[in-house]
View (cartoon, rainbow, N blue to C red):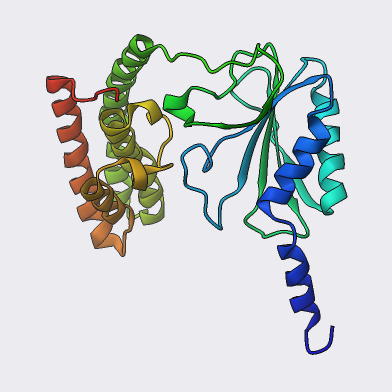
Length: 273
C-alpha cells in the first residue's frame, strides 16, 4: 500500500482478528463435534471487566478420552483464522481432569491471548461456581451433565478458619527471615522475602476478611475487591524505593498483619456475601 510502511500494513492486518472473530470461529468448529459438551468463557467476561487488554479465558468440556482431539480441533480452527504465533502447554495443574494451553495469534493484538482449559466431562472441577468464578458466559451447553454447582459455604468457612490459623503460624515462623537478611545486608533477598512472606501473608489475611470467595487469588483482582483505602495502603507497601524504605515498610506491614489476624480471631470478621 502506498504511503504505508510494512510495519503499518502488518499492524492493520493484526487488528482484523478480533475477540469476537476468535470466539465465532471456535464456536462454529466445536459445537458440531459429538464429543464436545460445552464451551464457556470466564475471566474478565464473567466479572463484566472486558477491556482492550483482556485475554480470552475459555473452558471446553469434552469426553474423557477426547482431550487431545479437542486441542487439535481448536488449533485447526485458530489456524483457519490466523497462524498460531506461539503455544504454551501447562505441564502440571492442581485439578485432575483439566489440561491447559495458551495461544497467541500472529494477526491479533499481542494482548489477546487465548487461555484454554480442556476439561474431562467426568472431572470434578468445571470452574463454574458464580461466587468464585463470576457469571461465566456459555457459548453452548449441549449436555445436562455440565451444571452450575452450589457452593458449600459451611465447608468454605471451615477452610477459611484453617487457612487463617496456618497463615498465622507461617508468619510467626518465617517473617523474621526478612529482618535476618536486612541484618546481613542482603537487601535483594530481604526484598524478595518481604514480598513473598510479609506482604503475601497480609494479602491472604485481607482476602479472608474482604473477599473470602477469592481467598486464594493472591493479588488478582485486589484493586476491585478490597476497600479502596486498603488497596491504596497495600500498594504503597509493595513499592519500595530504597533500603531505608524497605526496613520501615517491613515493620509497618508486620504490625498490620498482626492487627488483622488478631481482629479476625476476635470478631470472626469475614462474611460470605
